[in-house]
Length: 253
Image 1 (cartoon, rainbow, N blue to C red):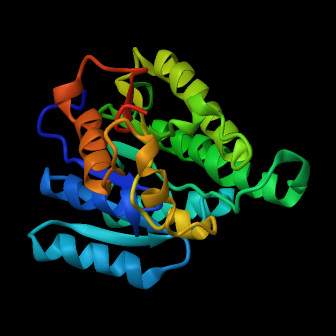
Image 2: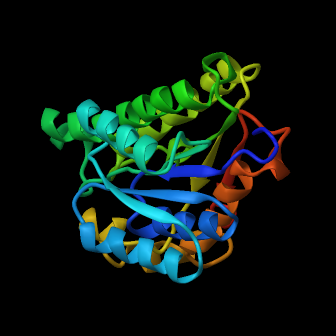
């Protein structure tokens, strides 16, 4: 739990689209100053910032590839200078690749997947801890990691590598939550299921959400807002006794 009246500043990695963008907008509506991180699409990030500012919120766009440690350091330095030390981190940035079986996966694909989805989240958490942890003079805070129900299901025949990165995020969440439990930082995770976002297009299946909907007990894909609501709740003091907690936003899947 953060100190009373401390400014609320959140960094959302991969905040220019999909779940990240929905989270940035919702967090701003809850009083957070928002750093919208993006890798390449400056226009999309600017649109998220404009949407937040039009509603009376405060936001900045910050470029940086979370697959590169130097970029992560630069992102945090920019946020420090322009907004202040963060009190919340949403490790949302992630990638998927075209569907294929493990025997067809090359080392370059696997390295990219783990660099962004796992190492990027861990390095961002490292920098957040330095700013939020009470042992470092911080006011405390919250980290929410984006996992996936793929961590439970395994992604056979399509995305075993992606599922494996999310399994790593699950383990990281549990361990880090326990490590930081006495240092003012709560660490939780949200596991989305089939969500209607453009990440499916980047994996070569733009219609995947609609195609997979019949396999979901609720018979539909989820929305980015539905995931964002879970994330922002875990950031908030309403979840003050939750750490190491997972919320599946997956329609029962």
